Image 1 (cartoon, rainbow, N blue to C red):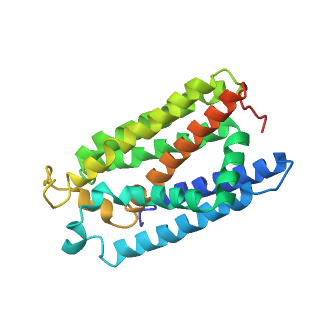
Image 2 (image 1 turned 180 degrees about the vertical axis):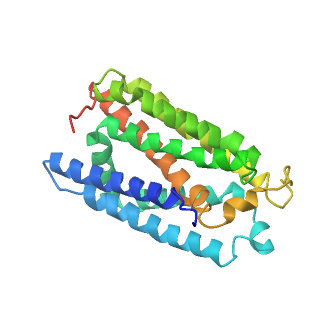
Length: 248
């Protein structure tokens, strides 16, 4: 039976959270309802990028020597972050909509989505069977699993408002930094080029095959974007002196 990857389902969950958060924020807004539109404006380009990234993997673009000379491990994971940042900078309605989402999304929703990072256990199992680069697993996968487990452990406390906004800001920032700092270096160190340190198989080239490529080029960066949204959300609620709690 063919292996079914969880990666597309994780992306679907990320998109669903953002759209649901937009709908919820619009229901709370007294003025123009822009949050849902902002969520859709962000989701659609990410879907398009995911399609192209998958196509590049399936057609061999990512495996070509010409592409590898550009040291993609250092910048490919940044593409979704650049897309989101560009939209936020260029479209005021998107900025105001995301602001409303950050202000009104229950904190435990933002913790729950991060719990899905436990799914990185799949790469751990592959590493144990020598089907995934061990140096990438140690640098990214293990920390991803650990952060996902921490989300499960704090979920109830966050939902009941027993964790401060300052603590949530620190937690979300930790979730961002533990991946963004070592991630690109770990991937590139296993790809052909001047930065290659690990050449034994399996190499980082396995991360540029479909469907695995959708993790570093789409899903993992999206989790980091949601971490940044969580930081901003906790900051906004901290300035208003409240913990955002919802019974939903």
